Image (cartoon, rainbow, N blue to C red):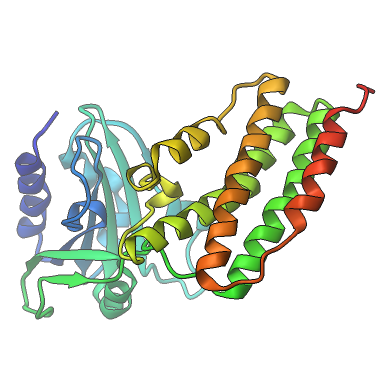
Length: 285
């Protein structure tokens, strides 16, 4: 696997050789000093260019970055913009050696628009000194935010409402539907509530990470064990147990969040939980 220095030399070397490329930007986790480093971090790169057309006429120019395992060009799926002008074009490249570059070409006409859209940014090359600052510390998009009363109410209502869908799908033995609902809307609400709890403990100064991937750093061992237990296999009985564990954890945490912020405590869980057990105990059709 090529090293960080080798990849940077390659990325910057290509840019320095090309007069059309005026600015090189690194963004994403590699531009975030607080992000944990590992071998699978992508190289999220933007080349700001005077003219996109030469690159799009022949895509073989990206071969210089190495042997690819697989690639996507997502902008091709959307087709040429209505005005007939490409503002940006992305190459998502997974290489055989394990490295990945997500390289986006952006027209210099849209420089300011693009700069304001980034979460973390580090300018690696600026041939014309167009950008004064080299690092822009934009707020982490996953930084936990304090909930409003409406946020809390909607989260609680959605969790309990959609949990009834899981129960019905399990009773009908619709495995894929039950798993889908449980892993999408129900889990999303659980992760949101747990994130607020973590925010309370950290004074809302940390990120939960995409998909709540960093919650394990801040939950206590009991909560973490409960959360892990909500990831079942394909056995119906285990899915039922995981659903009830989700309910236990959600109810415990939501009560504390309501107490801290002075929100009105919902009784929806007290009414829905007996219904879930009722469905669980129905004879199989």
